[in-house]
Image 1 (cartoon, one colour):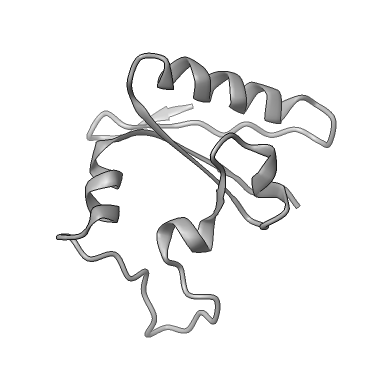
Image 2 (tube, rainbow, N blue to C red; image 1 turned 90 degrees about the vertical axis):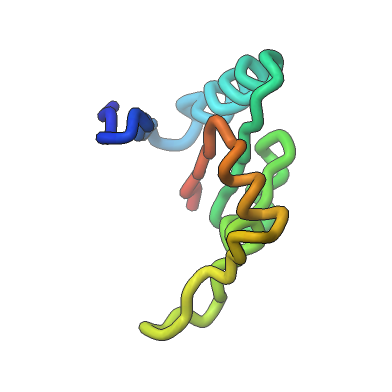
Length: 98
């Protein structure tokens, strides 16, 4: 786990299949949401997104283009709801389950 300059924490949980990572993520999600905070749960594939509470795919949540090129960026307008949601979010759980 590492602390960034602006006080954010980056934590990586690594483990092979059946090591209860989803259980850990779900527990963290419920603990933080129980305090009234916003947690976003995203995962690489659509089917796997069903395993996380309110989970969505990374492409859907962050408007990441499916066909990536050097000229394409995430389409998040700073005056829209998604930008405000990201500002108010306490934690993003990004599961790269394959």
